Image 1 (cartoon, rainbow, N blue to C red):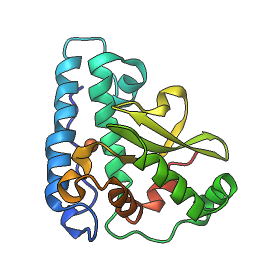
Image 2: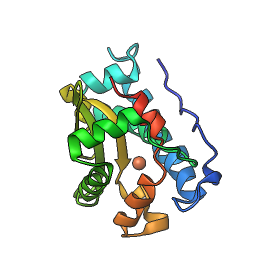
Image 3: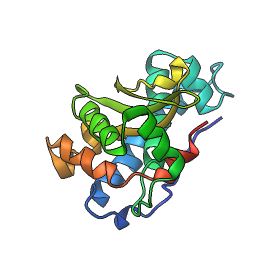
Length: 191
Ligand SMILES: [Fe+2]
């Protein structure tokens, strides 16, 4: 199987008060595309050649895992965003209140985890059980789904995700990210 770069589901020039179209272009068309291209190179002629991207992420290690997971993580990250966020669905709001006390408390905890995620990585909201949500921070390409958890939201805290616009102000980037989350998509990821 040869993987190709997924299209963004929105026009990146329509975001306001988030990262610039230049960051989107570099992030999607250079970084994300490179992870996909590298994955295609690494699976050529191997047992992974006929597996899905998800299957590769769940079963590989080393450079193939790093590239395949980054390809998967980026597609998921871009899907978590929208230029026009709507109200949070009641199902998700109820789950966040049950797990974190309030939506605001979740936002604060998620932001703190993302801001304090040392180095390059991802901060996640994962479903760890039928009505259980938990925040994880991972380094580099790691994704808690390999431990059996279900991803529902992620923020990319690699510097390439924000440095052109926010420089070292990761907290401002995370705040802007949370103002542009597609809560309908997040809710659709719940199992
Ligand atoms: Fe990234």
